[in-house]
Length: 106
Image (cartoon, rainbow, N blue to C red; front, side, top):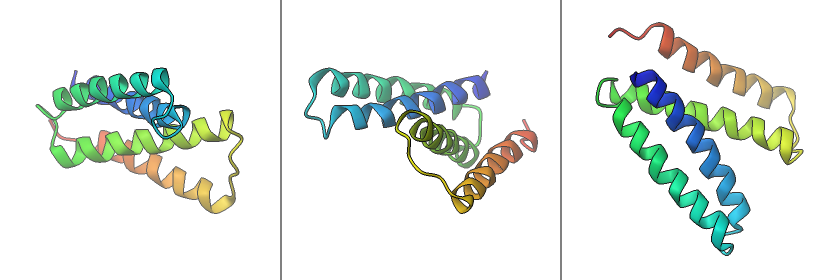
């Protein structure tokens, strides 16, 4: 279950990162509230995950999911630019996340 909690926490990290953009520096009320609620729920799921996963592994995977998800969201919805170096770096992050999951020992 810990890995599922971690996946949920990572997805919520993407949600609150995008929410911060929509909150426009915390000046928009509803996007700000949505962002804060997403943060709280995301940290809750992260806390559940670290009960049984090593802290370093959980944190690295959590931030990796958030980073990759936020980049993908930015590319698709905000039409942010991408070049070869950025794509390679994202692939390296995904490789690290997969490696941490595959080689994790319970």
